[in-house]
Amino acid sequence: MKRALALLLVTLLAAAACGGGSSGSGSGGGSSSGQMSASELLKASQNALKDAKSASFEVTVSLKLDGNLQGAGAGGAFLQGPLSLSLKGQAGTADAGAGKFDVHFALNFTGGSFSGEALSPDGKTAYIQMPTLLGPSWRSIDISKQTSSSGGSSGSTNEGLEQLKALGVDPSKWLKNLDVSTSDSTDTIAADLDVAALIADITSMANSPITPKDQKQLDDFVSGIKTAHASESFDHSSHLPSALSAEFALDIPADLQNDASGLTAVDFKVDATFSDWNSDFSVSAPSGATPLDSGSLFGGLAPAA
Image (tube, rainbow, N blue to C red; front, side, top):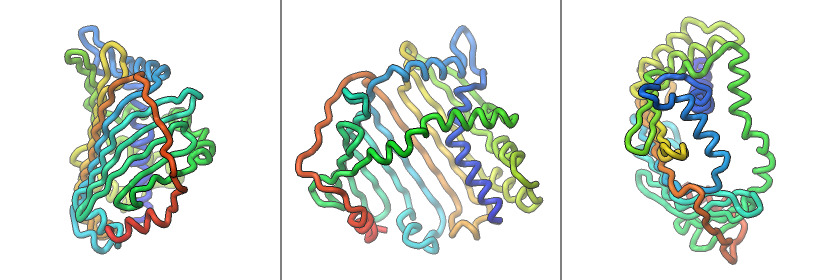
């Protein structure tokens, strides 16, 4: 059972990390009447993003877990009921080439909510304000060490895709019902994730054969998937992204519910819009900020959990 659950975790991580990248390397479908194919459109967008300096964005992430999660502890109690996170702000490149951002955020959950703002003028120090949890003062976080330690991660997805291809795995085949459409000034790519094909490829690379019991659990998991769909829209002229949405909905099979701490269903959604590409904006460090004490942050979350 633990092996099957581990494979499910690897599968979902691969879907997140490679699924989007695989479409960029491409399934070719969706081209008609002279419009660009999915692979052509994604390549054009990647080229446009290389020269992008800034953008405004709005993102909403929602999570709904069904079942009795009280047995999962404080974390389960926190997640019981709908959970939503909203982000709105701007991100871009500072004069020295480092990143800068200014983001307002709000988290709503059963029994409470909190909101705040996070910003960085230089990509080295971030400042965060959360009145509900930390009081009215600004707190500072040194992110330069974290940025430097993960400096090689930008190419990890592409490297992972090349490694998969070297093993004879084509991630573009994890997509089905691929469609490219054009409406007014917007091009849109939409597709479903073929989880069965993804799992088949992942298990084929396992060091040892999958047992019949594990295979049945994986098959049951796939049969419980109601939705695994994503779409991305682009400006027809610039090819820069304008919107992104994704949804994954799953009914936990009865045989797996005992190992899921009472969880019976999952519905996860992400919706994002992007605008004001390459419009400059300024970010100023707030005065009087003090270093963030992680204990005070998590201590503030504990009563609400």
